[in-house]
Image (cartoon, rainbow, N blue to C red; front, side, top):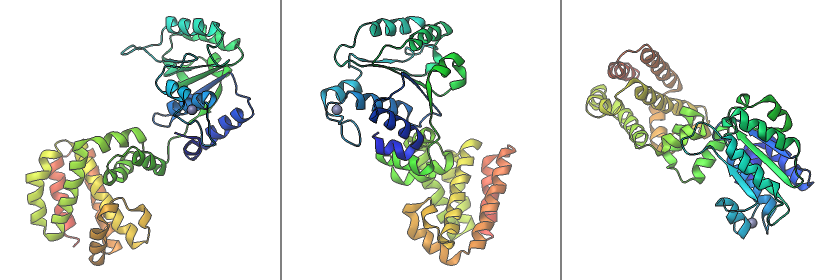
Length: 331
Ligand SMILES: [Zn+2]
């Protein structure tokens, strides 16, 4: 994460922090709050490295100098990360006591100290109270970064002493960009994001073998359907049913089918950028020649009907079987 990327994903947060750093007017404590997967941890890292970097550029820290590397590996003496201990439900008073003891000394090297508390809502009331005293009487050169997904579980007195930075959910576009940077399999990204609109969920799906298989089976089923209803039915029994063995998975299957017909509609409407199955463009264009936009809308409404039946706990395979017959009727 660099400042440019942060500006794209979290414009307000980036503006506030960059402005404060440029003017050397950082507050003593910031509370980074918002949903999972919105870049709070990365932002804390970015701010800290920017402050300590030996050769910063306009984009941000160099990531290669000794300070950048030590911060990234958690080995900088003037940067302390507090996280709940492995498997522990809370951040204990002793962890905060350790932090304060460390901060009672002057910084080891730079005249500046930063501490970061992850999952800050997990502090016990005692831990929060001892931290409160600490941020009420800040030492100069000390910066506190508190990170939470559940701001309402923190004491009001803590919140009011921090400058709150609210992270917003990422746009679908930003989620896809991030997943692309992580090298996740390209054909799975758009379907995963269309299903979840959530970075962590989409990344999890894209890594799941089941999902890759599900996508390719849905495409196979649709191909069979272009030939004949019987071919599609056979495919359901032999291949589809064993993989989509509960209604939750079948719902994903239906959504993946829905995107196909929505893609056909998008192409009819010249909205190519909205196509989910980008790697299937040739097939989509071919089918589009014999499949009108009205037919696509009709197919989508049949799939939405099927989805309602799944929600009403009708058996997934029989829902799919009936759907395929009805979709066959559109041809
Ligand atoms: Zn550096």
